[in-house]
Image 1 (cartoon, one colour):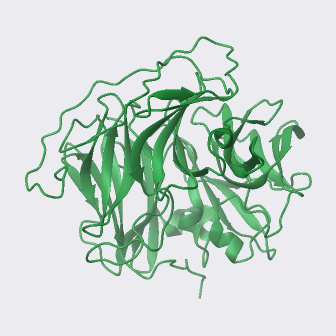
Image 2 (cartoon, rainbow, N blue to C red):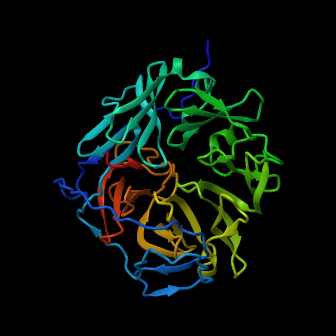
Length: 458
């Protein structure tokens, strides 16, 4: 008997794609809004990593951390001193909103029409692991059909671009039998998917690159100098691998060109490495580092880590490095403003100029949505609360269990809006909230699904 993929959740899930038809913006209204398309807002120039100033809308003041050192003129004007109020409805930017129903394992794409994949999920037919390309033009997922699975790639209009059955996926995916492959796969660039799976050697991972245009695959190198492989180093890339003892290679982060890699050295030293030249470009000891991410344009790398503030108390901060080095450096100084601040999930804007993230002070009960502008170094708190990470305690009215896996804010392709998850304590639902950064408001889009992406308009 050939090995099979192990299902990590004993339930059925569906995926859906939302094109613009939406649920009412509030739970008390029975009518559906008739959204229109907003014009994109264009941001210019590549951001330069800087130290940051911080502004908190609604509090009437701007508190300065070390002043930003800018090598280019800032091109984005920061709007501060205003929180974003909740409204009944609003305008939705163009493109296809991708929602994931963890209770039924279905994918929903909402745009000008709604596409649910599969339309009727069953024990033998469902989807799992949804991921979008860095350019937000393709959507990938595993479609499970009885005892087999397909790797399906769809274009932004919902049409199928490629459908690779298990039997023809090549060595990379055939070798994934019995492993949680779908939970360890993600786009590395617009042409290829990076898949992590157990190696023949116990305690090690194997990284495969699968070309979505041809179905061909190749194994990527893991033999980097002083690579840490202990259980004490976990960057949060693949918690299941860490739990199962697959430690070596789990924390390696390739860039989209596959010429740069960031990995932890022994001793928790974050290291930027040139794969072609086989040399180290930058390194920095980090404490409790997690959630590493390359910017969509591949020019910057950010990771969260604990750092000691001017008060002597440790809290979460962002650290950054350019793809060519020469140094990792601290990007934020939140702890100097409020010691012990926590940073939740975060995501890069499509143009690599901003980072949307969740932040929470020690005394706060909930995380608040914020954004970091890499041109000005300013952080804006939007005063909108939400779910900032995976939370197994969340439950909905009819389907108990987690419905938010990551908590990452989802950017619209034109960078004018964000999608977040917000817990409705009164009605025991998870609401999908659309935050409009231009109009300065937020409203309910739908409920009990998780936003996982926003495809460009075809």
